[in-house]
Length: 429
Image (cartoon, rainbow, N blue to C red; front, side):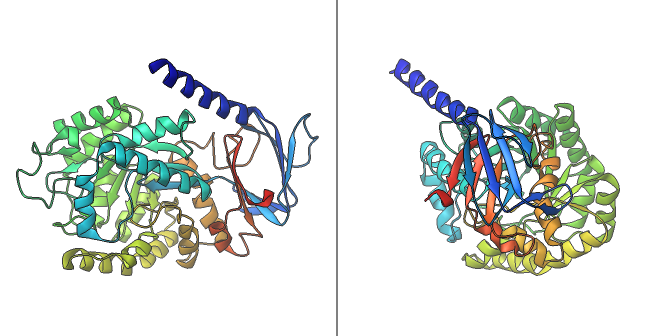
């Protein structure tokens, strides 16, 4: 049986490699240049060996398949800098907590493959997965990389790291004794700088590409206030220092101004949500080059969900503040990357974030850049994805018409290629 499994795995991997090696010439009426934020006409991209070989007019390689997508725009594969592919969207708050306890790790893992696939088919060829349980995210990432299941390129965090009783303490809200031990560093729960370093090292040991830190309370956690700091300055300093020492970036879930300032002082790479940031925090972010990932699409899932009164009050307060916060961040020159908090709303709807960012004050071009070149920079992948140019990974999507004229077209992807393999081509039907 073991030999059969190995042979099957090798066969799948060989199939993926064969798909990557096949040369393509992609044609469309236009192409989005994520560097300039403009479209060029016509759009032509030559792909071979999983890489972009050339952009613009070029000779067709021998044996290449020519795909003419017509009145469409070729774009870099979209990037979502804040997802939770191993969690499912469930509008029934209380019921979802019970179902999570009932499902086996195997069932959760299988369900995550569905989330990965719909995300890829929506045009998101790269994601940063900020928090998961039981290392399912590591297994999912590895399975995608081996070609066992289809999904986006994953930069993944394993356990989020927070404080006892805080937003990222999975046992918060349950009576004492429900779990077989009190949460500790191996569960992502810390209470001093030494435990902080131990938690980072543990995550990296078991596969973390990035460190996710819970610096403030959250909307969906059952007992805390949304903007209250939950880690001391010393704890945050230790978390970020250890992450950077181990060559990992660090992202901070932080709704509040004070929690964000502490994270920024510690050297954080991005603030996730940032709902109640004040001008001082935003100026600090600007001066230190810290990205804001606003996760506006959370409002979609929050509007569809049924919450207990405390959580509903937090959700209402947060949603009312989102757009004003983003507008002020833009005025102060804060760098923005697209991230959605996928799983707080249904997976596969990630492109709504483009539309919401534009509605909140970003130009259409800047919104598209936030989900391509800017997000690639934040993830440390600017030499791999986010731009259509020679030598980059052949992560290419196409949308009908011109997204600069109608950004909603990003929600109607018709073509998806990742690493030179075609996963979706609606024009071939």
